[in-house]
Image (cartoon, rainbow, N blue to C red; front, side, top):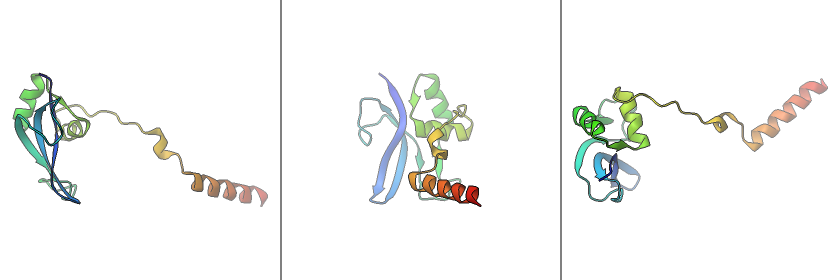
Length: 114
């Protein structure tokens, strides 16, 4: 059985609260899970220690047994020092949008004319 460590959403509309759970990879996101490993509350401040709470000892055991974390959970584990941080690359993030590119071209043309 392939297991995943992933987030299960709870809370109300526009007030999310997630449980970090171990589940069978074939189960739906909020469906049946095998074990609850922690919580994630995105409504709290980023520097709040209660934002992400995990049982790290149990998570390490499960990773050793072959459980695969999802991308978001892997980022939490990287911040906690359990997994190495993956290098992220989004080369399109630095490319300006269409309107900004047009403004920059106009500004460059104006500077060249002076």
